Length: 330
Image (cartoon, rainbow, N blue to C red; front, top):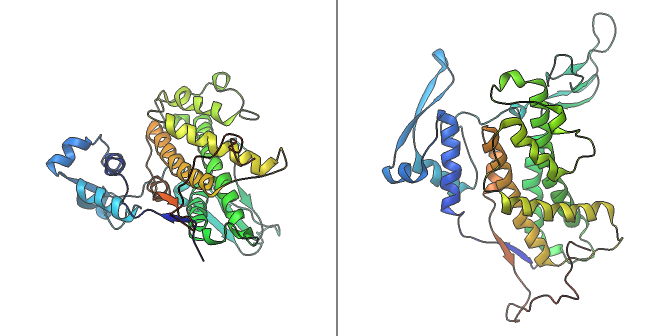
């Protein structure tokens, strides 16, 4: 029952929480919030939810929000009296379920769909029998990343066991979904610009400059951000390198070329840390798009640090020799 990976008990970095809190608050009130000045002055802001008779105002101190993020490693917008942070990326968590066919007036089965992009586009998810339809798969994938990350850490006692199938599958799913959530985000930006450009007055959509989506490398799709929004992805070099590392490992676990695998617990710890960095990358992308940061992204940004917990901590650990060390798991 020895866990080879354990969570650090130190709280999240204060500077990170302040910057994240300032962006969340700024998006809620519709103007930029200065981190240093607002923290020093201990300012309080009026936040409004709804409109008309249903409007509800809340006074929220910036320090309260930052301390909430730091202590909970999450974001409870309802508990804080803040509006939901959903956007076109999140589909406002919209999904629908059918437990059986519905017969229409003409005797045919009625289709249940969601107004994804409507109009003349064929991009409209719908079903006509038992199943589920999603306006956005982001909430589901974000939740799965958080769950698999926790499982890899909490069940690391079986990581080196011959019966580690559940743990190993969680690791592979975690790496795959971490890449998928970035790819999905960039595709959603492309579709939003193509079919809802009129709702984003400062955006442009030039298919020739964006190039074809199919067969395009993931890292090249980041050019879409500037070419569509005119905004630059700032301070994301470290996070982009983390995505590249995870993508390389994901590719090997998917394709197995060469068809062998070797990894260490220290490798896994590095990948777990990179998942958190990709969470920051998702936030950076949303900053460029000027959209809200939902709870699922906040939880990835604020994932705790992890460290190796060897069976014998007294052993002086040497650096891995170059004839053993290889990039990726192979």
